[in-house]
Amino acid sequence: MNKTKRRLLHFAIPIVLVTLGALGMRALTASKPEIKKRKPTAAIPMVRTIKVKTGPQSVHILGEGTVTPLREINLVPQVGGKVVHVSPALVNGGEFSQGETLLRIDPVDYQLGVTLARAKAKDAESHLKLAEEEAAAAQEEWRLLHAGGPKANRNPPPLVAKEPQLTAAQAKLEAERADLRKALLSLERTELKAPFDGRVSQENVDIGQYVSPGQALATLYSTEAAEIALPLEDEHLFWFHVPGFTPGDSPGSRAVVRARIAGRERTWSGAVVRTEGKLDERTRMINVVVRVEKPYAKKPPLPVGLFVTVDLEGHTLPNAAIIPRSALHQGDVVWVVDNDGRLHFRKVDVARVQGDDVMVQDGLKDGERVVTTPLKAVTNGMAVRIGEVKETNRS
Image 1 (cartoon, helix red, strand yellow):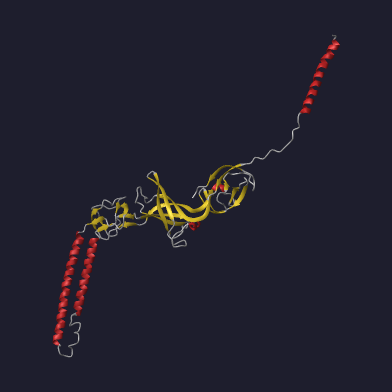
Image 2: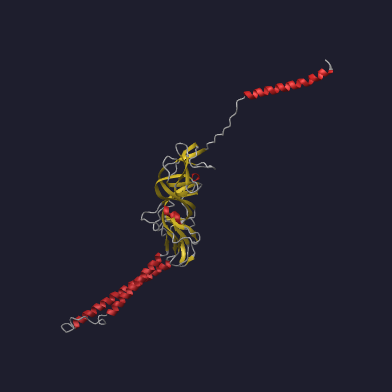
């Protein structure tokens, strides 16, 4: 093969190969089915719902406060003298019963005073008897002197009958008897007795100390009941009864006092009894007073000074539902899913918000499903897929 033919062959072979490849590609392209354009299907969002349960629901209002005693007094003597006895209960934290002798002042001086007063009263009694006998003798003498005369039926003059002397003797006896009662009262006051069942919060007296009338020797408080003042907003008082403040004559609303003491959570039952005399001028809050009877009856007790949480049980709504706060949207709207899986906006009547829960008094029916999942883009009537379903179990 000459040189010219070899060059032509080198050029012809690539041209033939390229031509065959182009023809094959065209054949393959012609046999491929045509791809049709279509819009992708929109994803249906999945939501969590709760199943509404309607029925009677009590409104609960929480408050916080410090436990204070129902009564607190200073132990003050009415007579002076040296202290000769102090009860073992008269110490800080000591517990005592009503009528128990807490402290005794030396009674010797007062016993002598009683003896002197009693002697004076006896002397006054003898003077009165003598005056009565003298008055009777004078009247008898008057009758004998004027028997059968014109003055026989008349009473003798007061001076003749010695009426002034008799009156003075009677007054003297009354005065001496009053002094005797005063001396006996002073002697009785040498013993300071507990006016109620209670405890000692402070004491500053001991045996041998001289005390004077009016001197504060100790501070006592009663254990018959304890009170907690709860600062509440004015609107909260609409939901429960406060005797003497809200309409009605029924007893105050019930309350449950909760606190942590001795390493455990404890509860005590109480009741609303009144409000304090005036609103707080700084906070514009009303102090509602809750009373707990016999706070020291069980151990550990509800001690004075403890900071507690109080759950007030208010009025009962007959057909209300409680839903999570996350299910309530702006404008008091909730999202309800129907049986066809469609989401609908529903306006509800909210009674009050209680922590993480919302009490709905109208707008929801028993068994309806309310959406709790937050969604960014929501339209009324949109389709949703229901995931987890829970029942409301709140009361």
